[in-house]
Length: 159
Length: 117
Image (cartoon, rainbow over all chains, first blue to last red; front, side, top):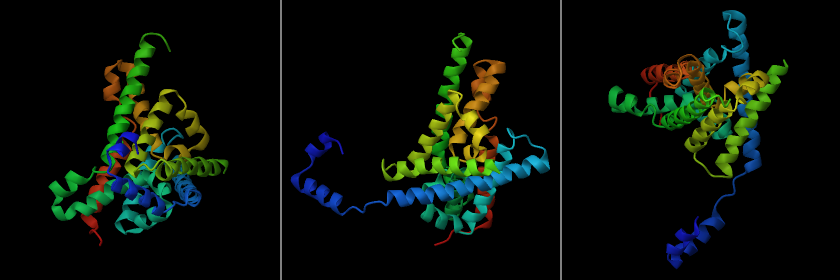
């Protein structure tokens, strides 16, 4: 809350703000972090097992095995989202289920399923990237800037 | 076996960082994920993400930060061969599996499953 915003408010609004702050539920930060750590770590461990599976059975190298692993994890998150399990995991784990790629997959897939009643073109097609779109936008733009700067620096012989 | 351990620890810690963004900075999940992707991209720009992947395996490739990392990585790989144009053409080179899997499985999911509630 900026000071400027505070000055604009009427005394009643300021009182309400104070009341709201007093009654706002304290988030159990430590407990949430432990849950996020355990679930997020577990998802990554499963990912590691899938990575080894691709290395041993499909002759991927350690560098390239990341790609099929990500695809497999997204496939798994489709199943979990479809059967409504991922919502429960998300309730429990918070960021532990949102930060791994399965969370990215879940946001795409749940949006797709949720909007299918509006039809496949306008509903599913139009809303699929409603949540994941911001991740793609900022990822791509940041990557563009970083890669551009680094390429220019290499070209100029700085790096 | 140590790889599983480090994947668990590093992956878990990245999730804790996300959880702290939720609870203490009070960002929405969308903001947090966008921020993590940008962090991943910047880390790869400094060449720091690759050592982390060698060290932690899936602990670094599964969190969303690796999306930013592989975007930069693909762009730089192509840029090495084709100069500045490569930044555009190579952007999705490595990430294509993630994006296409999300699109394809998302659509299949919408075909199979009905919304609940």
